[in-house]
Length: 395
Image 1 (cartoon, rainbow, N blue to C red):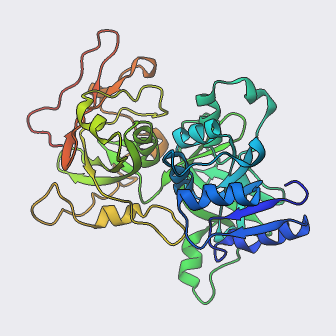
Image 2 (cartoon, rainbow, N blue to C red):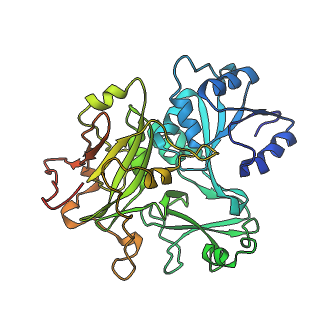
Image 3 (cartoon, helix red, strand yellow):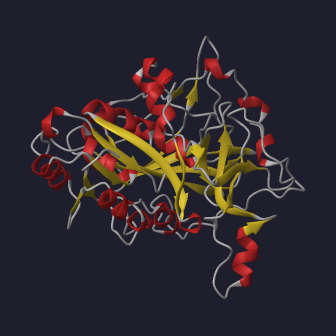
């Protein structure tokens, strides 16, 4: 942070960000600018009026900024770039890409209340400046490397060994260090559940890349296991965000008799391009960062995403709320496969009839304009025929 910064608060100071950034701005002789209510117009107005140099916000705030109308937007102060720190939920690469186009520099950090706030940051490397914008955005969506004084690892929960740094093998993010909590007050059971061999369990499933950078794929309770394959809701949401008509997306698991679980996406459409969602019959998600071929899902439109006080989308509400695809109450979420029945998470594979080379994958999605519709994802490339579900398959 530069000297005499002007910091715009879109995050309530009750959030752990308020425990440290407020004092950091003061230590630099800076100014804290607070918003009573977050809206695109209020954010852009404050940026211009106060000459803001830095701000923070959850990915939902970033989405609000990139989806602002021409009437709500104003030029950034002095034509300079504004540095934005984001966290609280993994930001979709498409949102990061569009923030950069608007002139913002996004820094992605990650942490927990139990780690006293930020524990990792996606530290930028100069050699990445030459990469295409889409690749830069994909890198910025990683959670990055640990702060000094902390240990962060991605471990297999069965063996408690570090997973390979191959960008594909999943494990759980764990923390150890002086700023990590020693336990929950007067709750020995919760403490025992949260700690494993001296490490704090985050509940987040992630991979580690060859350069050591961590990339979260999902919450362990949110991962969708369909036909033995682990599907990251975060990756599916990121692919949906890339569609020009989508303003918000939340993906949850849906019980299925054949697959165990299938995907269900809840989307909020932009007002102007909403007709494109109905008109466009095919949309490709090739190159959008999905590691797996996902299909046999559904999507539902909703007016707005329910949120926590800090602005993060409450996908749990979409999981537990009304399900328009069923006239009667939905069956319970399918249980995750036990270790006795399946290999570890990192070893799950698609059923053999869905195996295709990754470099030849293209996912085309027939889209409807409203309601809740089937969302079959046909895979085709280089003459490889799409795999259609059998008659007894659902979704």
